[in-house]
Amino acid sequence: MKITLRLAVVGLAAGLLTLSAGIANAAPAAAPSEAQWLSDVTAVTNQASPYLQQRLSSPGKLAIVLDIDNTSLETHYHPITMPAIPPVLAMIQQAKAKGASIFFITDRPELFRSVTQSSLTAVGYPVDGLSLRPNFNTDPVQVNKTNARAAIEAQGFTIVANIGNNTTDLEGGHAERTFKLPDYDGALR
Image 1 (cartoon, rainbow, N blue to C red):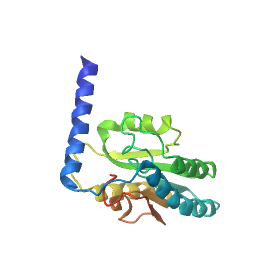
Image 2 (spheres, helix red, strand yellow):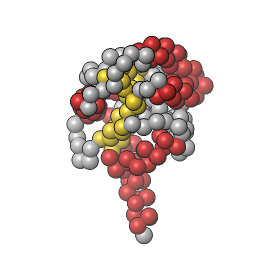
Image 3 (cartoon, rainbow, N blue to C red):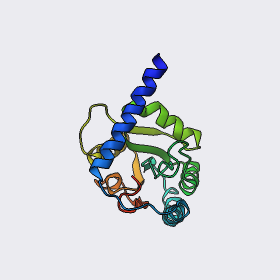
Image 4 (cartoon, rainbow, N blue to C red):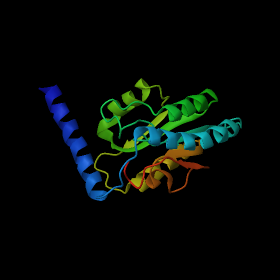
């Protein structure tokens, strides 16, 4: 009974998230093929990787912030299995090996903390911090994500890169550089 109820709550929450995303973005553009998307993502990671290699050679408490859906995990093309996005995972594993702390900031609700953390670690991401939308919070996405980055900085970290596929992942400051992965005018949220 407890498991069935929990699954029902998770299903309802996921449905509400999908519904609200559909209302907010009534007519997103069509998504390209997965191969084209991965090629476009690789073009961005090919720009970010040399910057990170150089920047992470400096001393300090350095951090990288990533969004999750269609930035770290393939949730558009593989919504059930949610594998890592290979070029992003490789870049982050290299950054971690150079001493960077890796933080994830998502608009997923706090209710999904354990499944989100498990999804990230199961595919190989190091997770030094995970910020989700607080329960019952109605602030705009960008406000929550900006506040989460400010909280990371308040812990003494310098965010050297903020990586996301949506402008709400990146705007609001609190990062030396931003790298935007493709979302094709909202087709991949």
